Image (cartoon, rainbow, N blue to C red; front, side, top):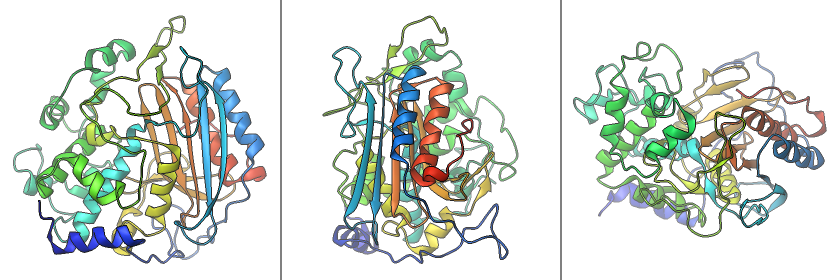
Length: 402
Protein backbone atom coordinates (compact mmCIF):
# COMPACT_ATOMS: atom_id res chain seq x y z
CA UNK A 1 0.00 0.00 0.00
CA UNK A 2 2.97 2.32 -0.58
CA UNK A 3 1.79 5.69 -1.89
CA UNK A 4 5.17 7.01 -3.02
CA UNK A 5 7.45 9.71 -1.72
CA UNK A 6 5.47 12.63 -3.14
CA UNK A 7 2.17 11.53 -1.65
CA UNK A 8 3.84 10.63 1.64
CA UNK A 9 5.19 14.17 1.91
CA UNK A 10 1.75 15.56 1.05
CA UNK A 11 -0.04 13.59 3.76
CA UNK A 12 2.60 14.32 6.39
CA UNK A 13 2.37 18.00 5.56
CA UNK A 14 -1.39 17.98 5.87
CA UNK A 15 -1.22 16.21 9.23
CA UNK A 16 1.13 18.90 10.47
CA UNK A 17 -1.04 21.76 9.22
CA UNK A 18 -1.59 23.67 5.98
CA UNK A 19 0.56 22.09 3.29
CA UNK A 20 0.47 24.92 0.78
CA UNK A 21 0.64 28.67 0.86
CA UNK A 22 -2.00 30.37 -1.26
CA UNK A 23 -2.02 33.96 -2.44
CA UNK A 24 -5.32 35.00 -0.86
CA UNK A 25 -5.49 38.01 -3.13
CA UNK A 26 -5.21 36.17 -6.42
CA UNK A 27 -7.97 37.18 -8.84
CA UNK A 28 -10.74 34.92 -10.07
CA UNK A 29 -10.63 33.79 -13.67
CA UNK A 30 -13.85 33.52 -15.60
CA UNK A 31 -17.11 35.50 -15.83
CA UNK A 32 -17.13 39.06 -14.44
CA UNK A 33 -13.36 39.13 -14.00
CA UNK A 34 -10.43 40.74 -15.77
CA UNK A 35 -8.25 43.83 -15.45
CA UNK A 36 -11.24 46.14 -15.13
CA UNK A 37 -13.23 43.97 -12.75
CA UNK A 38 -14.06 45.48 -9.34
CA UNK A 39 -12.13 44.30 -6.30
CA UNK A 40 -13.78 41.45 -4.37
CA UNK A 41 -16.31 42.68 -1.83
CA UNK A 42 -15.72 41.61 1.77
CA UNK A 43 -18.58 39.80 3.49
CA UNK A 44 -20.68 41.82 5.94
CA UNK A 45 -21.47 40.58 9.43
CA UNK A 46 -23.97 37.72 9.14
CA UNK A 47 -27.62 38.47 9.77
CA UNK A 48 -28.43 35.72 12.24
CA UNK A 49 -32.06 36.76 12.73
CA UNK A 50 -32.67 36.53 8.99
CA UNK A 51 -30.88 33.18 8.89
CA UNK A 52 -33.18 31.73 11.56
CA UNK A 53 -36.17 33.21 9.76
CA UNK A 54 -35.22 31.41 6.56
CA UNK A 55 -34.98 28.10 8.39
CA UNK A 56 -38.48 28.64 9.80
CA UNK A 57 -39.69 29.45 6.29
CA UNK A 58 -38.22 26.16 5.07
CA UNK A 59 -40.31 24.39 7.70
CA UNK A 60 -43.42 26.22 6.57
CA UNK A 61 -42.77 24.88 3.05
CA UNK A 62 -42.60 21.28 4.25
CA UNK A 63 -39.13 20.57 5.64
CA UNK A 64 -39.29 18.64 8.93
CA UNK A 65 -36.10 20.38 10.06
CA UNK A 66 -33.41 22.81 8.95
CA UNK A 67 -30.07 23.92 10.35
CA UNK A 68 -27.14 26.18 9.59
CA UNK A 69 -23.66 26.72 10.99
CA UNK A 70 -21.30 29.61 10.25
CA UNK A 71 -17.61 29.41 11.13
CA UNK A 72 -15.92 32.83 11.15
CA UNK A 73 -12.11 32.61 11.29
CA UNK A 74 -9.91 35.56 12.21
CA UNK A 75 -6.71 35.13 10.21
CA UNK A 76 -6.49 31.60 8.75
CA UNK A 77 -8.72 28.63 8.07
CA UNK A 78 -7.36 26.66 11.05
CA UNK A 79 -7.32 29.32 13.76
CA UNK A 80 -9.97 29.73 16.42
CA UNK A 81 -13.35 30.46 14.86
CA UNK A 82 -16.43 32.25 16.09
CA UNK A 83 -19.29 29.82 15.51
CA UNK A 84 -22.91 30.76 14.89
CA UNK A 85 -25.60 28.08 14.87
CA UNK A 86 -29.28 28.11 13.96
CA UNK A 87 -31.68 25.16 14.10
CA UNK A 88 -35.40 24.68 13.56
CA UNK A 89 -37.66 21.65 13.56
CA UNK A 90 -36.94 17.97 14.00
CA UNK A 91 -34.29 15.53 12.87
CA UNK A 92 -36.64 12.59 13.32
CA UNK A 93 -40.39 12.87 12.71
CA UNK A 94 -41.01 9.63 14.57
CA UNK A 95 -39.26 10.43 17.84
CA UNK A 96 -39.60 14.20 17.62
CA UNK A 97 -35.87 14.60 18.30
CA UNK A 98 -34.82 18.16 17.56
CA UNK A 99 -32.49 19.07 14.72
CA UNK A 100 -28.92 19.72 15.87
CA UNK A 101 -25.90 21.01 13.96
CA UNK A 102 -23.95 18.04 15.37
CA UNK A 103 -26.11 15.68 13.29
CA UNK A 104 -24.60 13.84 10.35
CA UNK A 105 -26.44 13.87 7.02
CA UNK A 106 -25.99 12.76 3.42
CA UNK A 107 -24.19 15.55 1.56
CA UNK A 108 -25.07 14.48 -1.99
CA UNK A 109 -23.15 16.31 -4.69
CA UNK A 110 -20.91 18.13 -2.24
CA UNK A 111 -19.04 14.82 -2.59
CA UNK A 112 -17.98 16.02 -6.05
CA UNK A 113 -15.62 18.58 -4.55
CA UNK A 114 -13.92 15.85 -2.49
CA UNK A 115 -13.49 13.75 -5.66
CA UNK A 116 -12.09 16.73 -7.56
CA UNK A 117 -9.59 17.47 -4.78
CA UNK A 118 -8.28 13.89 -4.94
CA UNK A 119 -7.79 14.09 -8.72
CA UNK A 120 -6.15 17.52 -8.50
CA UNK A 121 -3.75 16.19 -5.87
CA UNK A 122 -2.90 13.38 -8.27
CA UNK A 123 -2.30 16.03 -10.94
CA UNK A 124 0.03 17.86 -8.54
CA UNK A 125 1.94 14.60 -8.07
CA UNK A 126 2.37 14.21 -11.83
CA UNK A 127 0.13 11.14 -11.99
CA UNK A 128 -2.63 12.80 -14.01
CA UNK A 129 -2.90 15.43 -16.74
CA UNK A 130 -6.16 17.38 -16.77
CA UNK A 131 -6.06 17.85 -20.54
CA UNK A 132 -5.37 14.23 -21.41
CA UNK A 133 -8.13 12.03 -22.79
CA UNK A 134 -10.00 9.95 -20.22
CA UNK A 135 -9.56 6.99 -22.55
CA UNK A 136 -5.79 7.25 -22.07
CA UNK A 137 -6.30 6.23 -18.45
CA UNK A 138 -9.41 4.09 -18.93
CA UNK A 139 -9.06 2.64 -22.45
CA UNK A 140 -12.31 2.05 -24.30
CA UNK A 141 -14.56 3.38 -21.53
CA UNK A 142 -16.00 6.41 -23.31
CA UNK A 143 -17.31 6.81 -26.87
CA UNK A 144 -15.25 9.90 -27.70
CA UNK A 145 -11.53 10.14 -27.02
CA UNK A 146 -11.75 13.93 -27.07
CA UNK A 147 -13.28 13.85 -23.56
CA UNK A 148 -10.58 14.98 -21.14
CA UNK A 149 -10.33 14.85 -17.36
CA UNK A 150 -10.93 18.60 -17.31
CA UNK A 151 -14.17 18.11 -19.23
CA UNK A 152 -15.35 15.66 -16.57
CA UNK A 153 -14.58 17.91 -13.62
CA UNK A 154 -16.18 20.96 -15.24
CA UNK A 155 -19.29 19.11 -16.50
CA UNK A 156 -18.40 19.78 -20.14
CA UNK A 157 -17.95 16.20 -21.34
CA UNK A 158 -21.38 15.84 -22.93
CA UNK A 159 -21.97 12.56 -21.08
CA UNK A 160 -25.69 12.04 -20.50
CA UNK A 161 -26.78 12.07 -16.85
CA UNK A 162 -28.07 8.56 -16.17
CA UNK A 163 -29.97 9.79 -13.09
CA UNK A 164 -32.48 11.45 -15.41
CA UNK A 165 -33.67 7.93 -16.24
CA UNK A 166 -33.34 6.44 -12.75
CA UNK A 167 -35.44 9.14 -11.09
CA UNK A 168 -37.94 10.06 -13.76
CA UNK A 169 -40.48 9.05 -11.11
CA UNK A 170 -39.31 10.38 -7.77
CA UNK A 171 -40.46 7.81 -5.20
CA UNK A 172 -40.73 4.69 -7.36
CA UNK A 173 -37.35 5.46 -8.90
CA UNK A 174 -35.79 5.81 -5.48
CA UNK A 175 -37.38 2.64 -4.11
CA UNK A 176 -36.06 0.73 -7.13
CA UNK A 177 -32.43 1.60 -6.32
CA UNK A 178 -32.27 2.24 -2.58
CA UNK A 179 -30.90 -1.25 -1.80
CA UNK A 180 -29.13 -1.95 -5.11
CA UNK A 181 -25.37 -2.08 -5.49
CA UNK A 182 -23.99 -0.89 -8.83
CA UNK A 183 -20.49 -0.94 -10.24
CA UNK A 184 -19.12 2.27 -11.68
CA UNK A 185 -19.10 0.72 -15.12
CA UNK A 186 -22.77 -0.26 -14.85
CA UNK A 187 -23.64 3.38 -14.17
CA UNK A 188 -21.50 4.57 -17.07
CA UNK A 189 -23.21 2.01 -19.32
CA UNK A 190 -26.59 3.50 -18.38
CA UNK A 191 -25.32 6.89 -19.52
CA UNK A 192 -23.99 5.50 -22.78
CA UNK A 193 -27.42 4.20 -23.72
CA UNK A 194 -27.84 7.83 -24.85
CA UNK A 195 -25.70 9.85 -27.27
CA UNK A 196 -23.53 12.68 -26.01
CA UNK A 197 -25.59 15.78 -25.26
CA UNK A 198 -22.99 17.99 -26.99
CA UNK A 199 -19.44 17.86 -28.31
CA UNK A 200 -16.79 17.57 -25.58
CA UNK A 201 -15.88 20.99 -24.23
CA UNK A 202 -18.72 22.79 -26.01
CA UNK A 203 -20.94 23.64 -23.04
CA UNK A 204 -21.56 23.24 -19.32
CA UNK A 205 -24.17 20.52 -18.74
CA UNK A 206 -24.34 19.10 -15.21
CA UNK A 207 -24.14 15.30 -15.20
CA UNK A 208 -23.51 12.84 -12.38
CA UNK A 209 -21.88 10.55 -14.94
CA UNK A 210 -18.83 12.81 -14.98
CA UNK A 211 -18.04 12.15 -11.34
CA UNK A 212 -18.77 8.44 -11.58
CA UNK A 213 -16.00 8.36 -14.18
CA UNK A 214 -13.92 10.46 -11.76
CA UNK A 215 -14.31 7.68 -9.19
CA UNK A 216 -13.10 5.13 -11.73
CA UNK A 217 -10.09 7.33 -12.44
CA UNK A 218 -9.23 7.64 -8.74
CA UNK A 219 -9.35 3.89 -8.27
CA UNK A 220 -7.39 3.15 -11.45
CA UNK A 221 -4.61 5.66 -10.74
CA UNK A 222 -4.18 4.83 -7.05
CA UNK A 223 -5.14 1.16 -6.89
CA UNK A 224 -7.31 1.99 -3.88
CA UNK A 225 -11.05 2.39 -3.31
CA UNK A 226 -12.28 5.99 -3.26
CA UNK A 227 -13.00 5.57 0.45
CA UNK A 228 -9.28 5.08 1.13
CA UNK A 229 -8.32 8.13 -0.91
CA UNK A 230 -10.93 10.36 0.76
CA UNK A 231 -9.71 9.20 4.17
CA UNK A 232 -5.96 9.45 3.57
CA UNK A 233 -5.96 12.67 1.56
CA UNK A 234 -8.77 14.73 3.15
CA UNK A 235 -10.65 13.22 6.10
CA UNK A 236 -7.73 12.21 8.33
CA UNK A 237 -5.46 15.21 7.60
CA UNK A 238 -8.29 17.66 8.34
CA UNK A 239 -9.61 15.58 11.28
CA UNK A 240 -13.12 15.44 9.83
CA UNK A 241 -14.52 13.23 12.57
CA UNK A 242 -18.06 13.14 11.18
CA UNK A 243 -17.21 12.50 7.52
CA UNK A 244 -17.56 8.91 6.33
CA UNK A 245 -17.97 6.95 3.11
CA UNK A 246 -19.88 3.78 3.97
CA UNK A 247 -21.03 2.59 0.51
CA UNK A 248 -22.63 0.10 0.11
CA UNK A 249 -23.81 0.06 3.73
CA UNK A 250 -27.25 1.62 4.05
CA UNK A 251 -27.04 3.21 7.51
CA UNK A 252 -25.73 6.61 8.57
CA UNK A 253 -23.53 5.80 11.57
CA UNK A 254 -23.79 7.73 14.82
CA UNK A 255 -25.97 10.73 15.52
CA UNK A 256 -27.76 11.89 12.37
CA UNK A 257 -30.76 13.67 10.94
CA UNK A 258 -33.21 11.48 9.09
CA UNK A 259 -33.99 12.51 5.52
CA UNK A 260 -37.48 12.75 4.03
CA UNK A 261 -38.28 12.57 0.33
CA UNK A 262 -41.24 14.63 -0.86
CA UNK A 263 -43.43 12.58 -3.26
CA UNK A 264 -44.52 13.96 -6.63
CA UNK A 265 -48.12 13.70 -5.39
CA UNK A 266 -48.61 16.69 -3.08
CA UNK A 267 -51.20 14.77 -1.06
CA UNK A 268 -48.92 11.82 -0.36
CA UNK A 269 -46.92 11.44 2.87
CA UNK A 270 -43.19 12.11 3.09
CA UNK A 271 -41.01 9.04 2.50
CA UNK A 272 -38.20 8.30 4.97
CA UNK A 273 -35.22 7.99 2.61
CA UNK A 274 -32.47 7.87 5.24
CA UNK A 275 -31.39 4.27 4.70
CA UNK A 276 -30.00 3.55 1.23
CA UNK A 277 -26.83 2.25 -0.39
CA UNK A 278 -26.21 5.48 -2.34
CA UNK A 279 -24.73 3.11 -4.91
CA UNK A 280 -26.45 5.04 -7.68
CA UNK A 281 -24.10 7.97 -6.88
CA UNK A 282 -20.89 6.77 -5.18
CA UNK A 283 -18.08 9.24 -6.00
CA UNK A 284 -20.70 11.65 -7.36
CA UNK A 285 -22.65 11.91 -4.12
CA UNK A 286 -22.33 9.22 -1.41
CA UNK A 287 -20.39 10.95 1.38
CA UNK A 288 -21.88 11.60 4.83
CA UNK A 289 -20.73 14.57 6.89
CA UNK A 290 -21.74 17.33 9.33
CA UNK A 291 -21.98 21.12 9.21
CA UNK A 292 -18.73 21.49 11.16
CA UNK A 293 -16.80 19.15 8.90
CA UNK A 294 -18.02 20.74 5.67
CA UNK A 295 -17.12 24.21 6.94
CA UNK A 296 -13.67 22.90 7.88
CA UNK A 297 -13.25 21.27 4.46
CA UNK A 298 -14.16 24.30 2.37
CA UNK A 299 -12.24 26.71 4.60
CA UNK A 300 -9.17 24.50 4.26
CA UNK A 301 -9.61 24.13 0.50
CA UNK A 302 -9.95 27.86 -0.25
CA UNK A 303 -7.38 28.62 2.44
CA UNK A 304 -4.75 26.60 0.58
CA UNK A 305 -4.36 23.53 2.79
CA UNK A 306 -5.39 20.86 0.29
CA UNK A 307 -3.97 21.92 -3.07
CA UNK A 308 -0.91 23.77 -4.35
CA UNK A 309 -1.64 27.21 -5.77
CA UNK A 310 -1.44 25.94 -9.36
CA UNK A 311 -4.08 23.26 -8.85
CA UNK A 312 -6.34 25.56 -6.83
CA UNK A 313 -6.13 28.07 -9.66
CA UNK A 314 -7.13 25.30 -12.08
CA UNK A 315 -10.08 24.49 -9.85
CA UNK A 316 -11.16 28.14 -10.12
CA UNK A 317 -11.09 28.42 -13.91
CA UNK A 318 -14.76 29.27 -14.28
CA UNK A 319 -17.34 28.60 -16.96
CA UNK A 320 -20.84 30.12 -16.82
CA UNK A 321 -23.29 27.80 -15.06
CA UNK A 322 -26.55 29.73 -14.79
CA UNK A 323 -27.62 33.11 -13.48
CA UNK A 324 -25.24 34.41 -10.83
CA UNK A 325 -23.07 31.32 -10.78
CA UNK A 326 -20.12 29.63 -12.46
CA UNK A 327 -18.47 26.22 -12.25
CA UNK A 328 -14.80 25.35 -12.03
CA UNK A 329 -13.43 21.86 -11.43
CA UNK A 330 -15.79 20.28 -8.91
CA UNK A 331 -16.33 23.70 -7.36
CA UNK A 332 -19.23 26.12 -7.75
CA UNK A 333 -19.09 29.91 -7.44
CA UNK A 334 -22.18 31.91 -6.54
CA UNK A 335 -22.28 35.70 -6.94
CA UNK A 336 -24.50 37.25 -4.28
CA UNK A 337 -26.61 40.41 -4.32
CA UNK A 338 -24.09 42.41 -2.29
CA UNK A 339 -21.17 41.78 -4.66
CA UNK A 340 -19.66 38.96 -2.59
CA UNK A 341 -18.80 35.71 -4.35
CA UNK A 342 -18.79 32.44 -2.41
CA UNK A 343 -17.27 29.09 -3.29
CA UNK A 344 -18.43 25.57 -2.55
CA UNK A 345 -21.08 23.15 -3.72
CA UNK A 346 -24.73 22.26 -3.36
CA UNK A 347 -25.95 18.78 -2.53
CA UNK A 348 -29.31 17.25 -3.40
CA UNK A 349 -29.96 13.65 -2.44
CA UNK A 350 -33.14 11.89 -1.40
CA UNK A 351 -34.09 13.46 1.91
CA UNK A 352 -31.51 16.26 2.11
CA UNK A 353 -30.67 19.66 0.64
CA UNK A 354 -27.22 21.05 1.43
CA UNK A 355 -25.55 24.39 0.72
CA UNK A 356 -21.87 24.43 1.73
CA UNK A 357 -19.92 27.56 0.75
CA UNK A 358 -17.01 29.68 1.92
CA UNK A 359 -15.55 33.11 1.23
CA UNK A 360 -12.68 33.71 -1.21
CA UNK A 361 -10.10 33.48 1.57
CA UNK A 362 -11.80 30.59 3.38
CA UNK A 363 -12.28 32.67 6.52
CA UNK A 364 -16.08 32.49 6.66
CA UNK A 365 -17.92 29.28 5.86
CA UNK A 366 -21.59 28.33 5.93
CA UNK A 367 -23.26 24.95 5.74
CA UNK A 368 -27.05 24.95 5.67
CA UNK A 369 -29.18 21.80 5.50
CA UNK A 370 -32.85 20.89 5.26
CA UNK A 371 -33.87 17.28 5.77
CA UNK A 372 -36.16 17.01 2.79
CA UNK A 373 -35.83 17.01 -1.01
CA UNK A 374 -37.92 17.21 -4.18
CA UNK A 375 -39.35 20.47 -2.84
CA UNK A 376 -38.45 23.57 -4.88
CA UNK A 377 -39.82 25.98 -2.28
CA UNK A 378 -37.51 24.58 0.40
CA UNK A 379 -34.53 24.52 -1.97
CA UNK A 380 -35.05 28.14 -2.96
CA UNK A 381 -35.48 29.19 0.65
CA UNK A 382 -32.23 27.52 1.68
CA UNK A 383 -30.41 29.38 -1.11
CA UNK A 384 -31.26 32.55 0.80
CA UNK A 385 -29.05 31.42 3.69
CA UNK A 386 -26.03 32.43 1.61
CA UNK A 387 -27.29 36.00 1.48
CA UNK A 388 -27.87 36.10 5.25
CA UNK A 389 -24.48 34.54 6.04
CA UNK A 390 -22.29 36.55 3.66
CA UNK A 391 -24.24 39.73 2.81
CA UNK A 392 -25.82 40.28 6.23
CA UNK A 393 -28.37 43.07 6.45
CA UNK A 394 -27.24 44.38 3.06
CA UNK A 395 -28.87 41.35 1.47
CA UNK A 396 -31.71 41.67 -0.98
CA UNK A 397 -34.61 39.27 -0.85
CA UNK A 398 -33.39 35.84 -2.02
CA UNK A 399 -34.28 34.87 -5.56
CA UNK A 400 -35.18 31.50 -6.92
CA UNK A 401 -32.81 28.59 -6.76
CA UNK A 402 -30.44 27.96 -9.63
